[in-house]
Length: 309
Image (tube, rainbow, N blue to C red):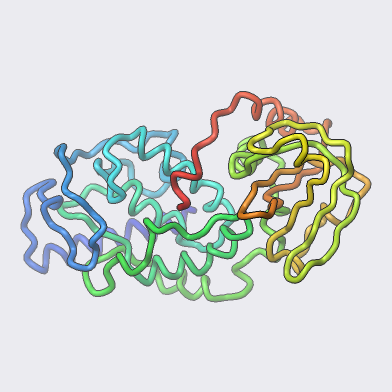
């Protein structure tokens, strides 16, 4: 993330210079009375804006390249607690590296840098991140949310952009992981917890059979399962549960090639299908794995349904 953060900070300084050269002489924090004609989703805030330190537990943006953010932010969050709750849902996506400027784009909204007027992400930055990350999100059953519709953002005004090198990198096919997203898992406690939180249920099981079905892979499980996180699954659902690896017919998934192991299997229901959202080898020798399974029982996950509408 370091190069993306540095690029962001350079673009912020450039935006500030352009704004000042354009004759913007607003006093500090007066910018909230300014509203871009092309961004119509905002509202007038009832409390005065302020600069606050980005807390360490705002994990999405703590290392973005600057130390203070504006409240209210550009997504209408008026408190740090609200910003943290909503931002936490996006941390797993940043870790998937679906676009080199995902963090830059999101933090420009969740934790905007303190300036004399709001500086929104450029429309084409939004479009680049959206196009790179939507396939990853869809594999987990999440659409690109309405609150980030790209035509809301400016294309001719001063805005947060990305460097040409980043733009070039984003267009290369090698910029995307060839591994099916639910199978591309780190054996680290935080990463596993994030995967579990992006899922509605989790259990231990073996896989009986894997079949290709159109552009998906159909995962048929053995009957015996040890439930770890029930979510909305009922006992009758568990007996004949079949999971689908969305758009996963051709991408590699090593876990589905070895049907002899026990796995930690995660999923969520989207429409009438149960999607496979994560699969880890059940490894009792891994301290990180055991810690994640234990932590899952008491960990309070962010409410994804309030974000991805």
